[in-house]
Image (cartoon, rainbow, N blue to C red; front, top):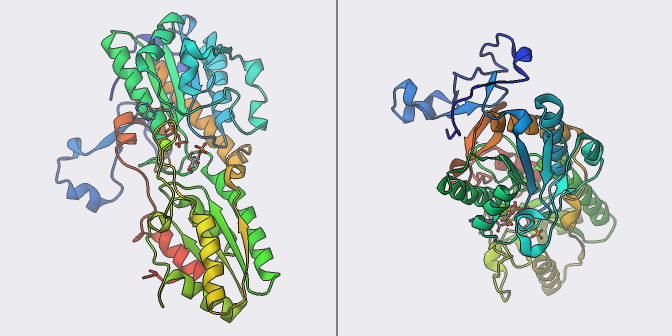
Length: 432
Ligand SMILES: Nc1ncnc2c1ncn2[C@@H]1O[C@H](COP(=O)(O)OP(=O)(O)OP(=O)(O)O)[C@@H](O)[C@H]1O
Ligand SMILES: O=P(O)(O)OC[C@H]1O[C@](O)(CO)[C@@H](O)[C@@H]1O
Ligand SMILES: [Mg+2]
């Protein structure tokens, strides 16, 4: 675990902590949270207990590293929108100002470009009054962006503004960017803590229970699935086709399908599928519509990319792959396949796209965001750096940033979530 140094300052929160012990709800600082969650997983490592992989617990410390009266804090949001960004900003500002007594908090505008002078973005002063009601709205009051920025210039800005703590709210790219900032901070011998709050509606950050905003986005997606079902049931040969976000991971498609239980097929990036042939998706769909009169298909944007021809696989400003449009392709191929067999079909195509991530967080996500923000402030004030705060097996932990970007969280085709999807839809294990 990386820390800036020993904690010598009594925390303003110390009085609230009492004599806590490790329980099923809380872990004292000297204790550790085991990384593995079954005896066999831990046993497979064949290590003595003190060498088992573990994580530092999150939460307030009695002694802290930074003197609140002298501490300056920066906050930035990067990458795509996610429900709850404003809740996290609000939670950070309120915890810092009201409980730790930090007096100077600034927000950088529009992601990492907010640090770079040539973009001319001014920093925003963040006070309890400014953030009080921002959680009523979706989006981020700070704005966000994609696109590479020079970490040397970012750290120049941190030095110019005397920032001691930087909170980065973003996905895997943002965390990689934060690691670059940590590297430059180290090279310059600065004492700046960089703490991340992981954000992704795709739920693709590994090792955490669930990312904030996922539940809200998934709930929003159910509205399109329901509408697709209504449309499909109201037309002869009705097919409701819903394309949902999910570049590499199909969690939104899976969970929103389970929540609504209206879909007959779910197609996700993790499970390849054949389109043609007797046992391919198109013919299976045609048979189902012939038997039942209608069907609903949910497809994640990253699914079936091997079928999307003719669209150059470009990248966005951050280098993320831009996928071909599997939704439009399916709409065309379904119609052509049904026509070729003389089977009537009426495809109703739904692409809710940004609508599922631009909404305010639901109450569960709002509460979660607030708790993540508290954990992030506790970590940073205690001098932790190059960590994200995360909820793992219902405990708040400090996860090293390199671990958080070491892999991507995927729907396991052999796991219980996909099994539930197969059971709910009745689709075959494979289209081949
Ligand atoms: N490998 C990297 N090294 C340094 N900076 C990076 C790296 N990858 C991405 N970034 C920067 O982090 C910021 C956000 O990255 P990106 O657009 O990939 O979003 P993200 O944080 O992954 O969120 P999302 O889940 O929406 O994709 C951008 O400014 C980008 O340039
Ligand atoms: O159009 P944008 O803002 O680049 O974002 C699209 C991407 O963002 C994500 O929601 C991840 O944040 C992906 O599911 C999607 O591919
Ligand atoms: Mg990303």
